[in-house]
Length: 238
Length: 223
Image (cartoon, rainbow over all chains, first blue to last red; front, side, top):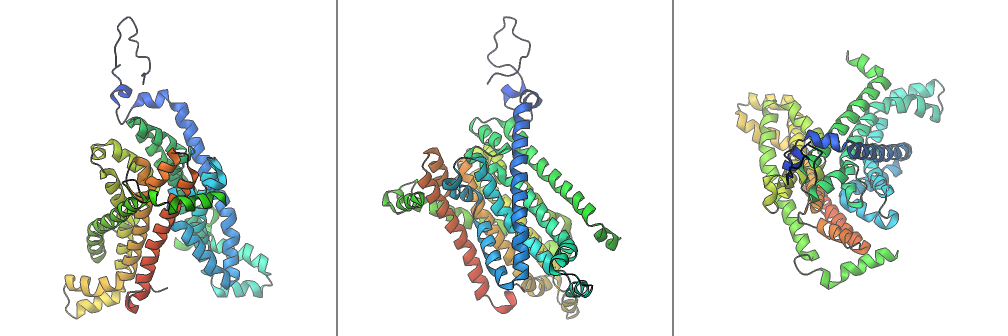
């Protein structure tokens, strides 16, 4: 591949310009400057796929966990199905969804939703179950109906466990998006896949590092949100 | 529905079961990779975790390793390994990646299991004159066994998944049926491969479930 203009075009034809792209170095500043737009697009696709999957997962997991908590018979099947889904390897999951969604971004999002569902349902359910019975009775004694009890007492108390699940689900989703490269919608995974086929070291390393950076930043952001939403957990510790 | 029928036809065609790219060979590869790497990972992770747990040292590392492992994409590690000198050595990248991703859950669960043993029991063992090694092997390890086994189970499921993704980076195993299907644009083959992988993963999970059910009461997780 041609490297960026090195200012040697004055008659001297060099077969390989001496820069880190031509040398195929792992770390390469010229790669960052010449392909910034491609990297940005990949990062944005990565964020879009992850965000969409986790949000849909959350929207589905919350009612499922509440149902499993309210009716004891429902918790067995809900937990069994989500566990089975979680056991299926990501590549197989995306492939099983191929007849339904074709080669599309929806396929990747749907696969990721199924994974985040497991983590979220388990954690939200654990949080709801950990609400002390006395607390529930006290709220009922104050005249709280079942809906108000759920929204203003049980869900806030389940928030730390739910947020822990959300953080794990988000970090896992960031990492799993890369497998979406098999259908061409893998965010940074696309760059890793293309870099593998052309032995382009700088591209593979840069995209991999960005993946980890996104995961860490997302985790820290959610931790911050959790602190803001649950000030009482800090007060109790301090 | 026709896709499922086509996938079934693909699966039941004897021609697809034989040969180097056949289902039987890929199944064997997947099984060998999973079992060998599980044994290697256990040999690496468990002694370290048990000793660290016994001494009560290095807890932050042992616990955080799982979180780090989750944030690093399997696919990225496989491709990075492929481009290093390890890549020239056949299944090298696959084996190294498999072990790398199986070690964190083993380490974390075994360590937590050792630390969750009732301190009074450990003190009683010391009071009876047991040496450190005796306490570790006869008291702490049996009590930590349910969590240690839980770690082995998570590691095994992780190994099956990683071995599948290895196909994207040219590794062997059942995932190759899926990637070959994508290259041939053959949806039936992709679905058939995916079903094989899913069934394989669920069988592994079921084996551990059965072992846990058959285990004596003291070795079972308290649920």
